[in-house]
Image 1 (spheres, rainbow over the protein chains, first blue to last red):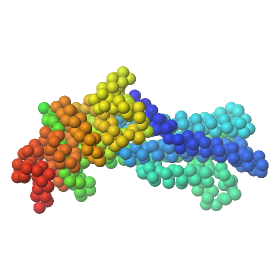
Image 2: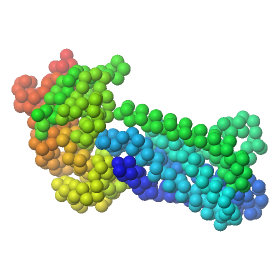
Image 3: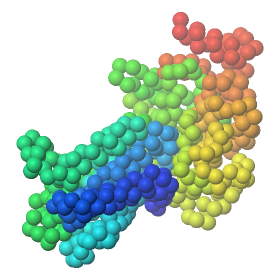
Image 4: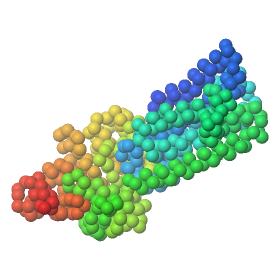
Length: 243
Length: 242
């Protein structure tokens, strides 16, 4: 009950921020349509719809990190959290209350991206649906990062780190905009040491039905997701105790 | 019966002592003000008593429940209206009150009747459907106090409740705080001497983490041999610095 009330409040705060809707849902769609238009005029295999959709959808989820981190850091900067810490709410209520409301937004964003992609020619198959299902661990990864950054950064820092740095890292190092093989070297090594390209390649493998290629990428995404969620919980509890 | 009892309460941050052996009793229904210059230890004391931070040593009892051994029980007895306005800015005033009802486990009917009751008590009817972030400072402060009163706390902590308010808003809040006396134990921190003098049953003055004096405004003035409470405060604090 306590957790659900808090989660409902967080959902309202997210929905009522117009930037959330514009960036979270609108921006990935604009990119999807724009790059598909480029592909229609100058065919590039990277921008073929089955190749492009996973990258854009994963990139869109980086905004979920921004939303959840902004919400937590804003709450920390006001006295609202301090007030709530003196109520019977438990640490679990806080952590689930911040995590759960972002999850439906993340999944809704993925579904909207996939529907738009279908309008642009992506086939609806069981593989596509399994790709959508695999967006769940990717969503948890990005929400975990949001909890993590929201627990340690101020709301201004969140704007810089999550709004600029993470979204760019998530784009450049995911192999969405350009083929990482073409860059190679240290850049490629760094990209494969991070989870973003694994999330995209896992999605591409699922959509194409190459399920044998899914598992190695899924393990990296899950490992990063679990580590970021665990770190987020620890750091949230630490700042709660530091009051 | 004592609402609050602290025994040698200490808080240290590294080699800095924020609260130094505070022993204090506050009776049930009393309005007690905690005064002191910045860094005196008022906020740290409040944070310990509200279980926001753990004491380094010593203990505090709220209506008999220990802040160190049973913080969950303490949290069911208290409420806090923090210094900064602690409202969810994107929610309406009603939704803010519903949020606090929810975190205290109220069902829909109980929430509705308690919110109606507080609306009438604090005159919130005209702003109840407006977004908290769009309200004036005075209304936000009033809403913040309403949120603290939702759970019918036995002990209410008000940290600088009238800071930054205009004269009218301050006088209205004074009336509201006075009305709570007797039923709810209120711990008030303030920098306004006239506020402490007008509202409090007893006042404690702190400096460098220690309680310098504790008594009624009259007894403090007598002790400092002056008719002005502000002068008495200045004398006592300066005397302790020597």
